[in-house]
Image (cartoon, rainbow, N blue to C red; front, top):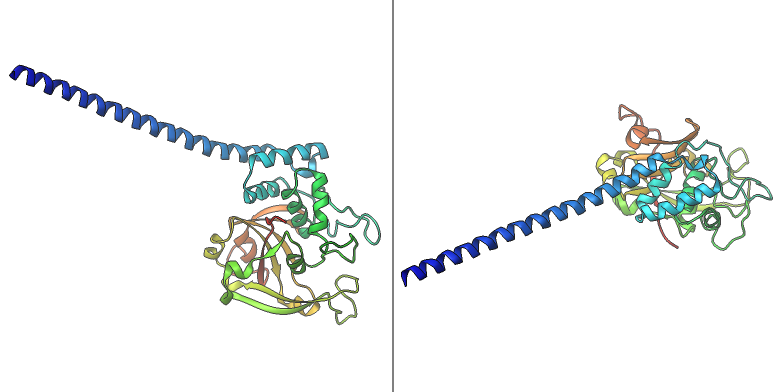
Length: 303
C-alpha cells in the first residue's frame, strides 16, 4: 500500500511538471507571436515612409505616374494626417511662382489646378485637393470647393482670395486657433478684408470687401509645449498686425506636422521646403520672431 501511494505521488508530480512546462512554452510562443506582430506593424510603417523617400517628387512626374502614386498613398496611409504629411513631402522642391492659379479664362488664364508650381496658398490648396482625391481629375474638381465660394461659379470675383475667409466659407477648412490654444490666449481683431487702402486701391482688384473677426495666437503663447499638444497635422497661417489696417489678414501659410516640421512654399527659397518650425519662426537664437502671431486651421475635414 505504501509503495502504491508513493507511485501515485510520483505520477502526480510528473503530470504537474509537464503542465508547467507546456504552460511556459505556450506563454513563450504567445510572447514571440506578439513580438513578431508588433515588429511587422513597425516595419510596415517604416516601409511606407521608406517608400515615400524613394519616390520622385510630384512636380517631376507625368499625370499617369501621379495617379498611380495617389492610389498607392490611399493604400499605404489610411490615416488622413499621415497621408497629408506624405503628400506634402512628395511636393518638396516644387518651384515657387506667385499667383499661379486661375480660372483658365476671363481675368486669369492660369490653371485651376496644377502641381508643377506653387506659392504658399496654392501649395496648401492643391495639397488639400490631393488629400481628398483618388486621382488628378478628382483633385481638379475639388478646387471648386476649396478655392471658391460654396455653389458659386468659378470666376476670379468668386475666388476665396483671403485665407481667413476661406477657412470660414469652405466646408473643407476650419479655424481651430481658439479650440487648441484656449480663449485666454487668443487675440481678436476686427479687420475689413480687401478694404480700400489710403492709396485708393485694394489688395485684390474686385468690388468686394468683408468685415472679419480674426483670432490669432500671439508670439508670447507660441511655445514648444503648446506645439507638442497640437494635432498631428494643421494648417498654419502667419499674421503681421501692421497689415490689418490695410485689409490684409495673413502674409504666409503652410502645413505644420507634429508641432515641429513646417512645409511651405517659400518665396525666399523659391521652392517648397521643410523646416523646423520653431527655428523658422523665432530664429536660431529664439528671440527674433518673423511674425506677430499665427492662425491654425484644420484641412482634413470631409464634406
